[in-house]
Amino acid sequence: MNILVIGSGGREHALAWKIKQSPQCGQLFVAPGNAGTASVAQNINIDVEDFEKLGKLAIEKRIELIVVGPEGALVKGIRDYFEADPSLSHILMVGPGKSGARLEGSKDFSKQFMVRNGIPTGKAKTFTANQINEAYQYLETLQPPFVLKADGLAAGKGVVICASKEEAQEVIREMLEDKKFGDASSKVLVEEFLEGIELSVFVMTDGKNYAILPEAKDYKRIGEKDTGPNTGGMGAVSPVVFADVTFMKKVEEKVIKPTIAGLAKENIPYKGFVFIGLMNVKGEPFVIEYNARMGDPETQVVLPRIDSDFVELLIQTAKGELTSTPVPQKDKVAMTVVMVAEGYPGSYEKGKVIQGLNKTTNGLVFHAGTKENNSEVITNGGRVLAVTGTGSNLNEASQEAYQLISSIHWDGLYFRKDIGDDLKKWSGSL
Ligand code: AMP
Ligand code: GLY
Image 1 (spheres, rainbow, N blue to C red):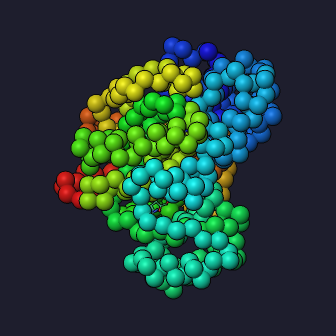
Image 2 (cartoon, rainbow, N blue to C red; image 1 turned 180 degrees about the horizontal axis):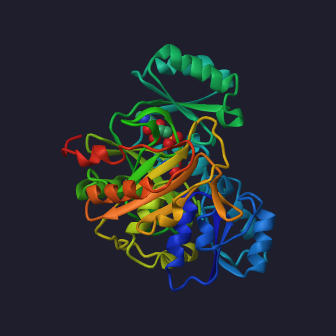
């Protein structure tokens, strides 16, 4: 069947790479894609939120299955658009409609959803611009540090962790009064801080059944030893040593099952990925956030570990025919390191020529912010490449990833040299 992947990052390159391996994959398209997706699929230069053009493309190319990568298109209702048009409604789509995408699009909605469905999460309350004093009073009931969350999508920047009450008050005022994140911060959650270690869990669901994909750990900070500002993700590892059978069983029973049952109970149709950001607090899972899509760069380590026909899983999800059987996983470790442009996550330059890509025959070099320019590949974003190594243990995976990186160069590139180090030294205690 002809398949369309929507998006242009490392996640979409990894999706296209995995989809292409399936015997069920006919022609593969990525919109808009990048220089990496062009090597496994045909790129079509359409914006991810231009539903009208995407609809025309789907008809013209006889697309039978669409996989939506980024959250923006889901929150804006790409599924609702396709379902409402009789010439498009037959096309299978992996990605929830607007109502399901609220799990990611509104932190207030997702917090209330967790509370209603008995899913463990941090204590929190939501406030609007005319409730600033109430928000300040609520701070008095919590211990520092304080977690403040803009309700809506804020390009990954909407969560602020404040060490002191004074700082938290100032940020609450900036978010609500000064609209620091525009409409996204017209509501703000004040949340208790959860102390622990983070884990990303991925589930495919058709709204009734679910399939758990390999878990991953993401490295969010720009600097080594987890210092400096947050980014979209500087690296990832799968599997995660502390996500042992006992912990994952708790995640399934206390988080995944009530999440899927909650969607059904609340009549929220959902055919797509649920990415659950968890904090492991002394061996107990607490949900920090839901996303209605796969993670980036987690996808670049999750998909290389799936040992089955991924297109079959996508079809079952989109058709509502998933069976809740475990997804076969390869018994190997995958680690990805994100190579970024100098200045990221602040301002950075684009258009630098990337050298050494053709030497990278072993391992997986997923493109994120790249584009083709004549016969060269140039940088076209902050996160430029995600280089995945695999091996029978984390040391081997790490060696492969960093060896691949050593042959790639552009002006001003930066990457963290300590991805996975905390897990290599893992002592087994939290
Ligand atoms: P998010 O944008 O929801 O992914 O949150 C960004 C980051 O903020 C998370 O990855 C966590 O590191 C941190 N965070 C969010 N909520 C909490 C919380 N309740 N306690 C501690 N850290 C949190
Ligand atoms: N890596 C985190 C995310 O995709 O949201």
